[in-house]
Length: 132
Image 1 (tube, rainbow, N blue to C red):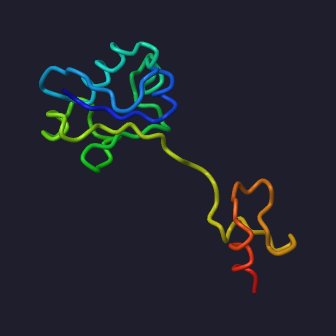
Image 2 (cartoon, rainbow, N blue to C red; image 1 turned 45 degrees about the horizontal axis):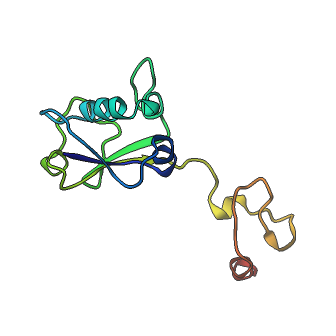
């Protein structure tokens, strides 16, 4: 039995809570796990992998035994700990964008506060700590 942990939005779509448990034939590979996941939850088809190319969606990552397997060959055997269900296969939603806090602060704004377009949220205490 393989355990797969999905991000919240995919768990909601598949109407599951917690980790998903799947039966996967050996050798256990990422391709076989994803095939089994999409067969059991057809609503997930096209959300993790592209419908046509079956390539991983760019804002999802796969983690296996605390290692990023996002760019590993999909037919490479997964580690024994995952193949036996001792460790889960993690499907993680990637986070992208934004600027470093110092780059997004604007000197022309009162108190050096970030512009509303910077995407940076700082508490009042954090803002006071930054003031000279």
